[in-house]
Amino acid sequence: MRALGWCLVLVLAACGASGTGEESVPFTLAFEADAAGREFETVSGWHVRLDEIYVAVGPLALFSNAAPSASLWDRVRGWVVPVAWAHSGFDEYDGGAVRGELLETVVLDLGRDGLQAETHLIGVAGPVRSATLELVATPSPLLHGAHAWVRGTATRAGETVAFAGGLQLPADAKSRRVTGIPAEVELAEGSTVVVAVHPQRWFAEADFSSLPEGGTDGVRPIAPGSQVHAAWFLGARGYGAFTIR
Image (tube, rainbow, N blue to C red; front, side):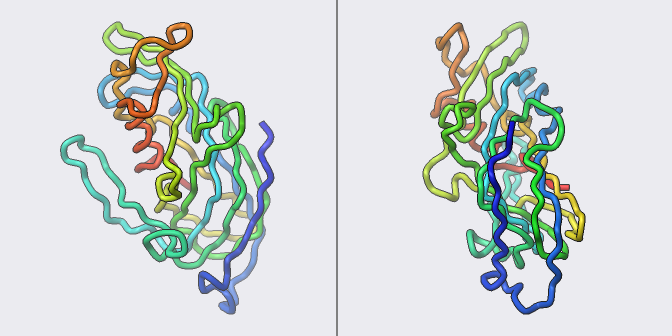
């Protein structure tokens, strides 16, 4: 799949980098699918195989400050629920200097291996300790008008559920934003920054038996309001859904 066009904007004045003498350096930004996210086990014992996995992301910003380490433990489910953090210009916390910012959208095919959307950019040299990105709905037929799209099967105790559907997020920007993604990258000339996507995090707490029967050819739809869609809504923006190296 050919990546869409990208544009780099260095927001120096707004983020206090202007006049600091920091060096502008060329680097490469790319995305990568976690192969373990195509077939995995959920916390409730479902064995899930995803045959189609698409997501649209952008803009993306790299920041000099680390995301706050504080997080909330959901003791009932035993899972980490992250506090929403991002750069002060966009959200609740001071991310520090912007090292680089992508403004365009790219559609990722997470069913294939290798780096995607490799883009040569100019950034500001120095540490990158956090990032923020948005999930977006695009007119791409691969996403069926949604922010992400999957098709697959889930099996548990002899029960097999075929499913398909899209992630539908609210219109407000905060609901679409994945904030405070931790990073430990030193941006320098020739660096490659890779954003890995982990679809297994999307459905970690999904109960596929809750999907209503029906749909075309027995494929159950992941409809908004279903338990699976709610788990996806949280998981796609939650802890570990994206990592950076």
